[in-house]
Amino acid sequence: MELFVDMIFRWGHILFGITWIGLLYYFNFVQTEYFKEAEEASRKDAVAKLAPRALWWFRWAAFFTFLTGLYLLEAISVRLNLDIIFGATMGTLMMLNVWGIIWPNQKIVIGLTEGDAAIAAPKAGLASRTNTLFSIGMLYFMVSSSHYGHSQEYAMNNLSLTDTGLLVGLAIILAVQANAIWGKMLPIITSVKSVIISGFVLTFGLSYIAYYL
Image 1 (cartoon, rainbow, N blue to C red):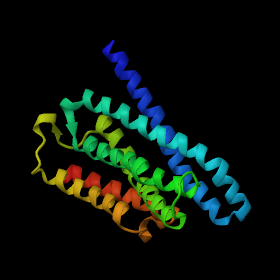
Image 2 (cartoon, one colour):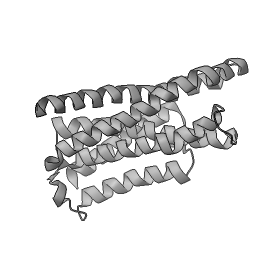
Image 3 (cartoon, helix red, strand yellow):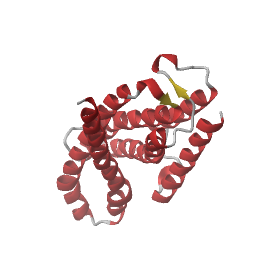
Image 4 (cartoon, rainbow, N blue to C red):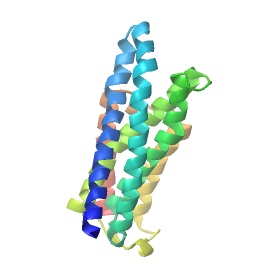
């Protein structure tokens, strides 16, 4: 029975994750680029009718991806490694960005709550681009933690806060997140091409840290 429950949660985690990340890529790679070229009437119609529906699926898929992930983390807590720590950290920050930055500001943009859309839109855009940056590495480490697992393993009650790889990797991830909260849209994530390239660079960098430090 326990194996069946684990399987159901893994299945749910993947299903919700596909929905979440798929919509994240839709927003960043398709909708945003369309809005740059669309006529004003078409853009307003999409904001009023399309965006709210997509955002509903987006935010709840993020939430349930996180919940199922928490269960899976508890289930594998006896064999954590840097891969799953990095992946879970980025995934958690991405979910918090959805509910703490993207959704509150998008509600202003689409007119569900009052506020300055000119201020809200860039905030939501920066968090969304940051999530896109994180997503490539997050997905890599989620997979590598089980199917490659090249980094040192830890027990949940034996995490070493002096481990160089752990500290350097988390410092990089938190620095990226800090920019999402207090920073600005940097050139390395401004365009679709740049954020994809930067996502792979971040992934390779963190993978190097997990393996060599």
